[in-house]
Image (tube, rainbow, N blue to C red):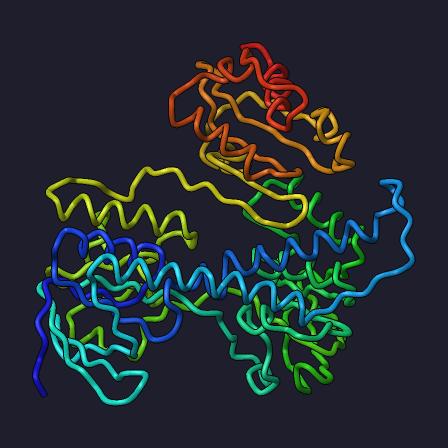
Length: 462
């Protein structure tokens, strides 16, 4: 079989990989991009954007339930899950079409199939429409992503549980959804499905939600779940699963020295991610893995094999689309002779519950663990007057300020449109503005951002 030669071979079309393919293609490079399933990667197909589409539908459902609060009398309503799914599918279809057009316009060649290394810089591709191709690149970029972890619990895999992929395709409303894991995916889906009308139980091994966050954040998330009727089973270990998801399930739980049973009709597994690095011949390519199975890279995202890079989640980068995009910029600039690294970059994040949890920089837990002194400013969201017009006063925002300078060390918000508000603080941090720059700003009234003036006006004096 003839081996086809390329200057660049890119495995995967996730956020970082696709932008690299488009950029190199437009530069006139001969680029092959191999994708086994989801054109554009997980974000537009099965993760970020589809889940937020579903979450927004759930938000609309919650407004129907609260309609009398806004002076609107209703005579009942029902959720048609097939229509919720179809709205999501339409968005995904439009996004995929945009991606296909971008690949065509860039001049990079999109090959649909599953790739496996057969040697250094050489891959065999099992094509989706049959047959195989062998490709070799002068330079290789690996962007194979991650997948939902299915733990080795007796009966779990046999129960055919949902992952986020299948949950986004539900065309019926589960009678009782059991969510295994109280992280990002688990919390977002739990609230959405509960708002559609299902009974929901979250099972988590930790003693509190969001254990990396401050205790006031965990308490706020837990109260949100309880107020919405979501049952929490904490400090819990599932020892056995019986039944089939979509029909009837029994989960045997250990909590310390005691045991209990949780029953439901559907099971969503949202307890971690596994890198897609197995069974693709990385050993034949000279690419080493970490103990956790991620591709071993340095701060320039170079692997242990010459002229081979890894990008995004499979490289152990923080599991956010915006970080994968920054990975792209690092590789792009270094290929052009630059010297960019992953170390020291900001990692903002947002949990898209309603209200949202967003953070940039240090929280109190991290500052205390590192012995970093700080001044704390904290206000309830109700102090941001715009929230009162929206009937969205739940939550708080807080900031950590350096004790000697006026530098903003970190910002956390649990409140309506928290991700958008956090972005304003992050930009100030990027610009090196002291907190007084926001405190003294003239911000439009009444907007949510105006609450930052209230927050930073409460910073204790030095």
